[in-house]
Amino acid sequence: MKTKSKFYKKNEFYIACLIFLLAFFIEMRSGLFFTSNNILDILRAMIVPGMLGLAEYIVMISGGCDVSFPYVAALSMYSTIIILKAVNFTGNVIVAFLISCAFGTVLGLINGFIIMKYRFPVLIVTLGTCSICTGILFGILNAHEIPTMPEPIQKFAKVMLIKTYSQKAGMAGSLPIVFLLFAGLVVLVWFIMQKTTMGRSIFAIGGDVSSAERIGIKVNRVYLFIYGFAGFIAGLTAMTRVVLMDTCHPNTFSGMDMTVIAAVILGGTKATGGAGSITGVLLGTSLFVIVNNSLQLMGIPNYWQKFFLGMLIVLGTGVAALQVSKTRKKGTAVKEEQIEG
Image (cartoon, rainbow, N blue to C red; front, side, top):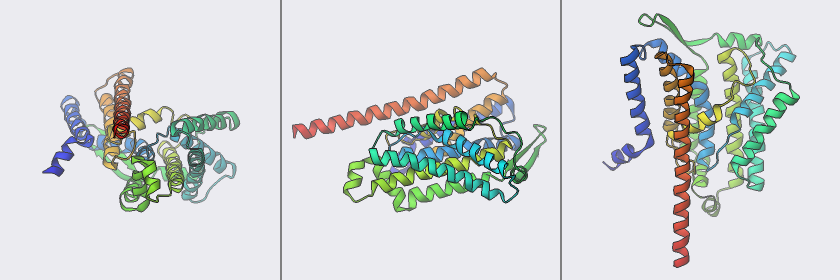
């Protein structure tokens, strides 16, 4: 009974209820929500924000807030494509993913090193990374849209995991093979966070860095892993985005930072660190995707879609602010008790 009671109090439960209510409401209004092509469209739309959400989840569990991941992804994506185009690449598409992941990992490790060495606030460091990546992308590389991808990427983009046709909607739907990358990443992050010493160390650091150091956790090593792995995910997401779009646009990740962060927080991950679940990340991401998808199904104008998505972002950041305020009040109360004692 206690387990059930705790579940009902979690963000995940309320987000899941909201998703089901929204789904049935849209089905009643349009009759198209549960069509096979729409379900596949939702799963497809979840891939990129879901992958970035996993990167942000790891950072947020440790008590940080990384806003650089879209810029790291954009720079990794563009750098990889211009290299492949320069050498007229015709090899295995895995090489493209490895190059992009390498770029992302290096950029993530730079973040991790600065945070580890100088203990600067994560938000400040990653804001700086945003500016640096943008400067390199548009100042040095003179980034612009590259419409034609190397042949291996074009071929890989056409590989579908599922194809379907809805008689009711009169539309075809498909789910690309890169969905398996997303699914595999979910399993990998879950395993690391729940079944390894590194995952437990990340949760411990998010709870209290000083306590984590006292019990022997090598905090510096953990910081390097967190940001290196987050960069790796950003690099992986970068090439995934290229495959989904079959084009390379430097602004493709623009504006994703706040959406992803809000989705992760709405899913129950504490902005102050130490608590959260992958289930919550997936549900929070699903909510954003479904809201956007549902508004389109009902034919609501684009500016109203932005309004509702903006409200969700405000709600997510509002929850984060309340969590920070609550944590500070608790910390102040504990200090006062210690002084009085």
